[in-house]
Image (tube, rainbow, N blue to C red; front, side):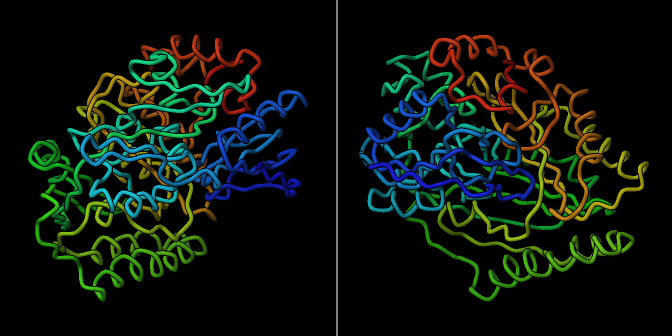
Length: 440
């Protein structure tokens, strides 16, 4: 049974930078309910847009039509411990998946550092983690159950409706509503984590070596300083001995310093921008070296309680050093005060049509601003740098490119548009953001 609620005055995303007012909000409890909801919206001449956690910083989930909450469509449909294939309902949150996989002693191959998203939203926007040999979350997708614009329910995979599958597994919400996702999981594993501060110059010089030597690497650079925090995670068998952080150390580093104290610093920096450089220097020194071993989800993910806005770009890995130095130069030249560290991760080349790592080993550079601080000039300047380095913007994070600028960056872009035209010619799943990035 579908629960239909009257619309709120407006809906707002996690970053508090996107607001919209839907005509209605539906919460279908089954695939049949979901299909009926899409058909009913079509009969009423309304557009449809599913929403997961609302964690995108773009307006990719906004609608003036029927907003479909997938919250009632969550949990395991089926699981096979032998093959590792697990089918989850589309609204399942990433944070719940480790608990759901535990009885089968399985885990997702890779995760990002935030786990509040729904699985359907995460794959649809190109969410990724880090690791030179690992792709984004959508590369783990083995099959999908979709509700298309005509209300039909279709299963697709590499062998069944393969073109529909290729478009929909990273589909920007433009192809259909994802009712269920089949993931290729693997035996549960532990991660041995090593974190330490490193000078920026040495980090840029040695980063490729670290990428080749370790399974998952990333670093955070604190603008106005020469300091970075480097993180490497190596995979261990599931039967390995856990050596987690003590409860006190985990609270001190990950809750008190990274959330409570950092929130204070952001507020102080907003009120007194001149304080940001010395605060950044303190932040760069505060998070010291540590080493521990724990279940993979506990290492991959972190709790982010300080709200921010974000822009993230994929570039060829060979361009990373030039990109960071160019961002450093523009911050200095403009006299900006940037309170948030810049995050750098990597991913293997893949063949997903709309993936930011399509056809190339990629580095990801993410820039952030505190949610109460102006961001547009900074994000646009970073975009100018990234565009010059053949950058591709993360679909769920802020950018200002349109379809004419994006088409040439994706070799299978026209193939994606052709599938969309076939399954949604009336643009039932369209909105302003999709008009921006895909055209009308």
